[in-house]
Length: 101
Image (cartoon, rainbow, N blue to C red):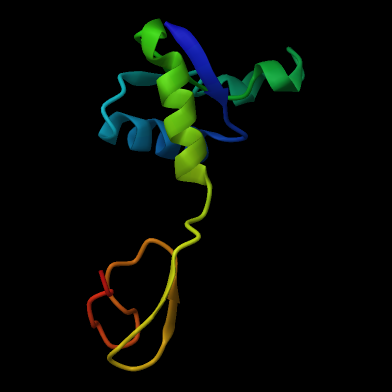
């Protein structure tokens, strides 16, 4: 196992671990409940962490996570209603028309 990232809170650590797991990476959240002893140990040592089981896939998982964090630069004009749609959406949020290919 190898540490992949440190999260500012348990909610984000869990979300990130779930997303990585859905992408096919075997990950686990460590230090899930260590925030209760912050102060007794340095605060940065009490933050939750996401660890990957297969160290050989560490770089691949880190790269996938960085791509996932970056907002999509995709932008398209809906042919149905003329709305500008930004992000990874495949249908217009306004009228439900499919994105152009």
